[in-house]
Structures are given as structure tokens and as C-alpha cells.
Amino acid sequence: QVQLVESGGGLVQAGGSLRLSCVASGSTFTINAMGWYRQAPGKQRELVATITKGGSTEVADSVKGRFSISRDNAKNTVYLQMNSLKPEDTAVYYCTAKPYLLILADYWGQGTQVTVSS
Image 1 (cartoon, one colour):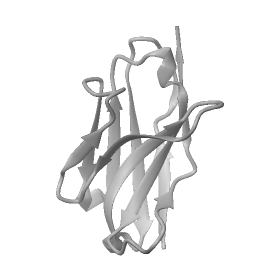
Image 2 (image 1 turned 135 degrees about the horizontal axis):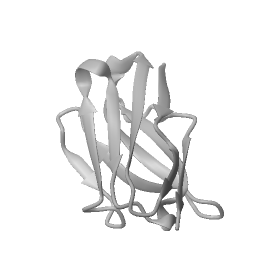
Image 3 (image 1 turned 120 degrees about the vertical axis):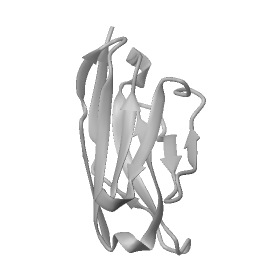
């Protein structure tokens, strides 16, 4: 089992920045990619960014150029740096971890609220 704990959310004005962190614990040797999804009120959960253990990244078009994802494998931590935040970035942000063994379900954190005021 893997546990994910997010931190770093909060309230920020439009144009500001936040950095989210997610620490994985437990059987971390079983996970490959880690990433972030978000869910705004009344909307479906959507991919924000992912990063493999080798450092390959995928970033959603809606945040490309503003958000970046990074990872410290030694600390089992993934980061989401969010710059030039917009009110439409307001959502609960969830950390996720994908096992190497793809038949296993992904792990999810409890989520952290990000609110961007205009």
C-alpha cells in the first residue's frame, strides 16, 4: 500500500503562485508515475500533470507554460509549481501515484484546495 499526503494549497490572488507538494509513504518502490489531477465544483476530475520515475512529464494544455511538475525520488515527493494562477484554476488538487503493475489501482491523496481570487 502507498499513502499520499498533499500540502501547499490555499488562497491566492490571480497572477500569484503556489507550490503543491505530495509525499508518498509505504511501498513506494511499487510506484512509477506520480502526478496531479484537479476537480472544480460541478466539473469532472481532469489531469493536470504527471511525471515518471525517470523524469518524463506530461502537462495539460490548459496549464502548459504556467505549471510545472517535478519529483524528488529520494524523498518520494512530487511537486506542482503553479504560476500565473487564474480564477479558473480554482479546484481541489489531488496527488496520484500509478503502480508499475498496471492491473493495480492508482493511489490517490485526500486532496488540497486551491482557490484563486480575481
